[in-house]
Length: 440
Image (cartoon, rainbow, N blue to C red):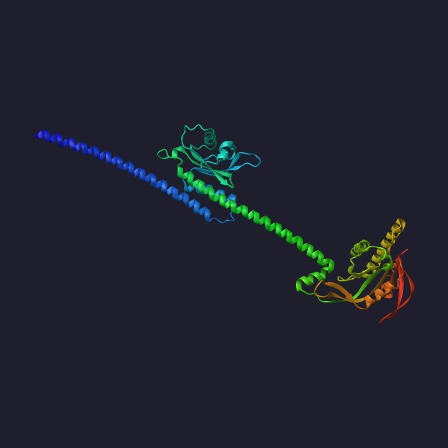
């Protein structure tokens, strides 16, 4: 082979290897570019997974509004999006959604975006699927509406499903001019957003459970409050308020000496004979009718009911809270009790029904008051003052109020009193008695 032919062959081989080198260089550059894109995708996927992990670590007491606001910011930063917002349902407007928690680049027209009202097609809403828009040629009406509404070329609309219903939509996207190699929303973006939606649903489940628990706690608290009020009301029906406070605070109540109070006794005249003609139920109903009225009257004058024994009603004025007007209040109450019984008597006589008449007696002096027993507490008073008051009642007449000398001295300037003799009282000797009436 001539030298010329050898030279031509060498040139051909050099040209071949140059072309191969160019091809290999281009392939290497393409591979490096693909590796770079893949690295970016892997980085973004890891960033998305970091958002999910951060979500799971958030405080369960975080309010949903705060969570969604922070989440929109994290999606923008971690997934390299330009705009992220939450489409929340408009109250009382089915299928209508409005943007909230908008996070965007500086020049984005948020004011425009906040005024958007989006009607989600019913079929799409029911499908509960994500919508990805990358192609400018996409003519789907919802894609066109979203693109015009939020001024983004590449975006995804991802529903957050909670209890089988759409709780909210995550909308996030990128501007076209910032994209490299025409890449917009990728499948892993959808996977990440759907995973984020699952975490949001879990957080909402916790919120729902907390609300249910709060309602149960509120309901139980209200029940306990009512039970406490009922218990205290029942206790106050048995014991004076001051004694109740002392009992609840200390677990016991000390007996107390009172220098002077006025004790009042009532008794129905001929009760045994009249009650024999009534059935047990009728008898209880009759006594209840009178005692309810007596309770109202004594409460009006701040008089403490002590107890009832059969047809006898006992109360005391001037305890547990001492007061200067104890005798005057007791006599006023006695007059109202007597007058109530008299009015009832006239009505019953006109109806041809049986009726009661009443005797009342009062005495003023020192007493000891306190609780007796450890079961079924009973507040009671003791002393000669109580015994004399009972004797004043037994020595009274039907329809009359009999008071002792000590009570007379306290009320003689306020009521009309008529002397009616003396009573021989044990340990007290002879005691003057007076019938008392309202001043003429």
